[in-house]
Length: 56
Image (tube, rainbow, N blue to C red):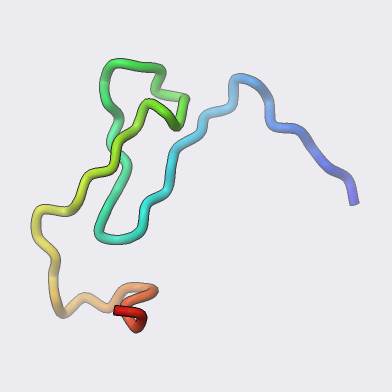
């Protein structure tokens, strides 16, 4: 198996569980995951089946 390294200038972004999503804080580097904060959707459709809904 060949392991590859990620370039130093590669973009990264955090991943949050539904109904949250990542939003850029508009202050820091857009390519860095630390520059993002978690936001929750303002309205959640109760009839929308999403992956993982069986766990709630």
